[in-house]
Image 1 (cartoon, rainbow, N blue to C red):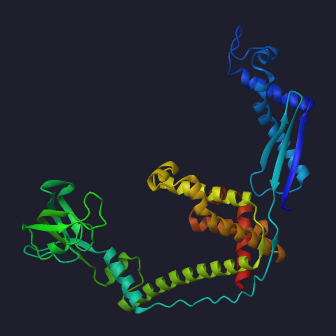
Image 2 (cartoon, rainbow, N blue to C red):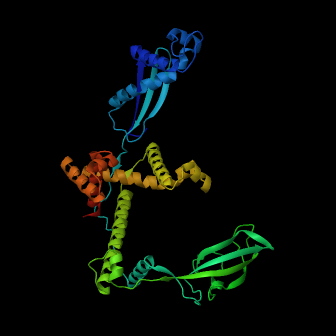
Image 3 (cartoon, rainbow, N blue to C red):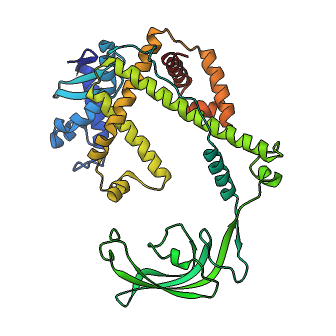
Length: 416
């Protein structure tokens, strides 16, 4: 048995167990009908004669658990880090013996955690990145305009089309559409479809003899298909000029020239890169420091972390209008496979958590209530909510204090 595991047996007997049995009787009596009595009015001895004392045991145990748990925890002198295991060792009309298995924090032996010799790269912004970012911003604010009469479809245009597909002389299911906006070059349709519309004008029709790719659905893979296409309208993306109106649209009220705009763009890219580099640097430091330490993680602690991650994943699915059962159905995943899939990340999280807690301990890192309170005010202001709302979301000021301690521990590991 690991050093951080404590097992305690608690006996509930005498008047205390009698109270639990009485509580169970009152609950069960309301749920059943005894001949000759209204529901909930049968005397205890009559109830027991009909259903047996054993019928009360499970509810009586439930009534006993809270008190037994507190007694066991007091005797164990340990701070549990995951849900304790409960075993019913024995139960009868005279007593109930419950066994609690408590698991505390695992023992951690730190290795080198300061002088890790991990190099943090400097952020550099290339001309290609600048051009790409500016192109992306211009595309985001591009206007979609109908092209002049007589204009031809070009790559990047949106062609509004009617189309009908035929396979083996029969209309293709789902292969018909009217006034469908198709961006040329988006590869929305099968290979060859969009490319062969380039050069057509409004009002023109064309027959496209194509072939479904071999990696298409089994019933259509490699089959020949004929599409009849009519061009109803052609639209083009008109990119904004690099001028003050565009800069204002981006929220850059102080920018007047292209040079100033490019400086803003460069600063934004640099800031993003610095954040990414810092995040990766912290990850590398934590990975190295946790690799240097010794820790024996209980299976129960790991399972608890996996279950927490699955719950978080479930909440994310809800935001997409899905539940876990639907996810399993769509992906052919099972709860067991998902659990197994999340174990490596859960192991890493657990290691990092106990690494940081141990570093905070040996470095005597403390956070006062005043410091945490000030931080809560600052965070609430940044999020645009009240401090009460922030603390409700966090759970308590102690959680804010814990996060601050962990961040201070990270700074120690980074060598800052």
